[in-house]
Every structure is written in C-alpha cells, then in structure tokens.
Length: 581
Image 1: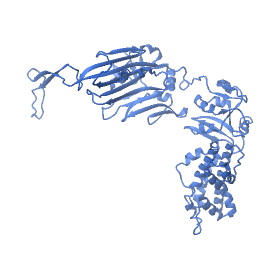
Image 2: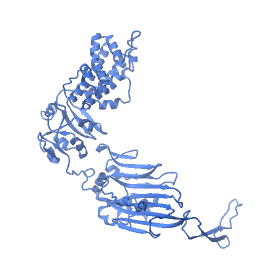
Image 3: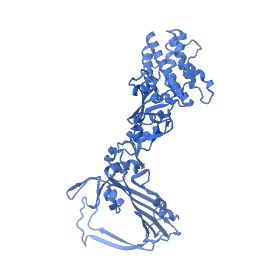
Image 4: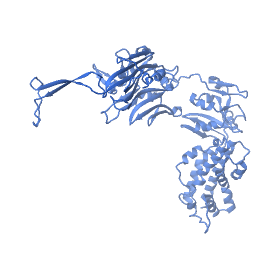
C-alpha cells in the first residue's frame, strides 16, 4: 500500500496562482472494486469557486465546497425572510457576498444529468462565443478562453484561461476564492507502515488541512468488533384486504416493535483514507486590457533601421517610419481563424485578423512593408505574430504603398488574387450558357483553395509548386472533358483530356494555333502540378516558361505571375466563347 497516495504530497505542492488554466468548477469520482472488500479504492474531488470583492480576501478561509455547491442541490433563486435572493449571489452569513461564475442546475436525479452554466456577465464581458464545450474569443483570433469536459454526459470540469480571468477580476475589483475537497480511500488487508489512528493524523499549512485516518472494519464494511443495534417497528391496524385502507394515528395498540443486536463476522480489514480541504485565493491582474481597455506596456519590439535598432510601445509610432517583414507573415496571420487578406492594388492590400487590419505593400524583393504606427496600434496578441517575422530594412518601402500613403496617389494596378474567383465564375457562366452545363465541375474544397491561392504561398520552391498544384485543382482538374466532347467529339481511337478537349472546342471557332496559345499557360501549370520540388529546377523549367513566369524574379513575384497567368487565361477563354458562340 502506497502511503504517499493518501498523503497527497504531489497535490499539496501544486498551487493554482501560477497555473495557465484555473478550474471554475470541478467534480468527479473514480472508484474501483466494492466497498468493504479488499481492493476497493476510491478518489473523489470537488472544486467550487466564488468571485469575491478584494477587500474580503481575509474572510474566505472558512468557505467550504458544501457552501458553494449548495449541498448538491444546485443553485436557484429563493425567497428568504420576504426578500428574494438571486441564484448567482452567495451571502456568507452576512460577512461578505460573492458571485458564482459557474452555476449548477439539477433536475430529477439519475435520468437527467446536472448542467453547469457560465455566468452570463463573464461570457458577455469577455466577448466569448460557445462552440460545443469550448468558449472562444473572436476578437482575439478565436483564442480558446474557457473549456468544459464531460464524462458520460455529465460535466466534470470547467476551466478558464488565467490571463482572461484575472483581466475580468481586475475590472470588477475582485479575486477568486477556490475551495477544494479531495479524498482518497482504500480497503486493504494489511495497514503496512501507516500508523495513523481512527481519530486521525492532521496537518495544517497555508490554507490546507489534511487528515489521514485508519479504521478497522469487518469484511463488508462494518466497524470491527462492534455491535449494531437494530430496531424494527411495524403497524397492526391496516387490513391489506381493504379496498381503501386508512392508517390512523400511532398508539400502543396499533404499533409493534422489537430490537436486537448484530455483530459482523467478516475477516478483519482496514479502511485507510486521506482527506484534503484547501482554500486558495486567485488575485486580480494588475491591468485589464480586455474589459477596462487598459494599455499595458508592450513587450514586442521591432527593428526600425538598417543598424538593427529596435523600438517598442509608443516609440514605435512616434516617427513616420515603416517596418519590413518576411512574406511568411501573411500566411501566419491570414490563415488563422478570423484572418483576412485583401487587395487594393497589384502590390498593396490589407492584412489582419478579427477586425484588426494593416495596410501593407510588397517591395521589389518580395518583403512585406507596413507603416510602423499601424503595427503599433495592433493588440498585443497580434503584434506577437508580426514581431516574429520582422527583419532589417532591405529593398526599400513598397513603391505602391508609398504612392498611397505619402503621395496620396494610389497605383492604378490590379492584384491577380482579387480576380481569381470572378474569373472562375465568369468562365462557369459563359460555358454553361454558350456550350453546355457542367463544363466546370463543382468541388467542395473550392472555397478553401481560393483562400489559399495567393502569392505568399511561394516563400520557397515547395510553396511555389504547391500553389501551381492548387491552381490546377481549381481550374484544369475541374474541367469536364466528357461535357466538352458533346460539343466537339474526338475521332475514333483518339483520347482527349480536359485541356485537349477545351483546345479542340476553341479551335472549332478560331485558328488552332491561336487556341493552343490561349491554353499554353494552363498547360504549363499542369506540368508544374506533376513536378517534384526535389527535382532540379531544369526538370520543370518548361512549365514556368509556358506559364510566362520569370524565374529570375523573387519567389513571391513568381507566385504573383503564376496567378496572373491563370486569371488571364480564364478571362481570355470566356471572351472567345462569349464572342464565337
């Protein structure tokens, strides 16, 4: 038998104040074997919490789980002494009152499991959205703030992220009292080196009270060597044959009773238990940036000049300067939940997440540039993502970004990313109307592919080829050869794929060499689809040449031109079909 399991030293060493996740409510039981018999082992845990005004911190020490969990009946409003008491408010004998951040509702016992509800003020004030048993914060990139776990349909744990809880408590000038009761019990045949008595061994330290006890029992559970008094009381004035029996008041004539003593005969066993009562205080945070809109000093720094000097906080936006970032930044921000990438001109756009956007530009070597003050005004959680991709200035500020932000003369150029979806839609509409329905097959992943179709995928050779593959999946792989062959049929023995079928359809109305030239960029993209990034570039150089991509440009620019080729081909095909049919 492991004495340390009962003494719970591992549990007693841990404290919640520095934890990432704080339990707001927890209750579970783990049981093995049958009570009263050797091998039985049980562990029980119940944690309840109460948000309490900070000035009442010294008066929460005598709170118990039973106080806060309402003895298992759950929380409900009630009238006491002609005054209504709200379900969410707990009054501790007039000494102080607090707020239940988790409320429990019980129904009719075993048939309907209990339910736990987060306090609406907590959910609404932190701006949380429930998704199954997780609460996320959309304004913070859908960060998970609260989570609930269940066992057999019953909730057993609700946790909150510590930073968000402390922000909320700070705004309300409160702390969180966390009250714990944990017990560990076992029935064994030998007590080993455990020398505690039935009265127990008690230890008290720093808000903890631990009690260990050993009791001798008979097999079956009764106290060892003790008798049990049994009393039997019955009524004699009810006739079971009566259709409507009535039982009168009890008296000496209609009540019979007897008593006897019973002594357990089972073998001697030991019931060993350890119990822990604990009260912890979770203080409020020093600031409340979410609820109270405090602006804590920022710790994220950014390189602001060629020498590598860094600025942070207010100094970052004090002067009119720009910052430089690796192009991987765009995927990091735009591809997370709530992320957004939009375009103003060919080389400028907007990048953000959860409503926090920054006007950016792409310079001549493929780096992302942005105005420092715009970055400084981002929330800290988003600044961290930008800071992680910050680099020394190189290649100058994007010319088109300067044209917009300094000269106030935005460039009259267009980004191919902004026209890929309209080009596909135009192609689908024209071919359906002029050729046949279903030339462009529907695909459930089109939305995901479109969101990922941007030049910043091309931060390395593998990414550039992956972009080509996705463009092929969006266009070439969705073209139905069988539908096109109802317009122009192949000769006997000929087999046409999607691109060849489309070329033959176009060649039926325009010069064959022109039709081939129109589709050449798509054919090049198809070749790239089959390329392996680990092959020498010479092995797939022809595909880039057919697509009109200059391999001497930075990779991000090559990705841009690959998109431009795709959009141009789609619009050119649509133009031919619309004009010739």
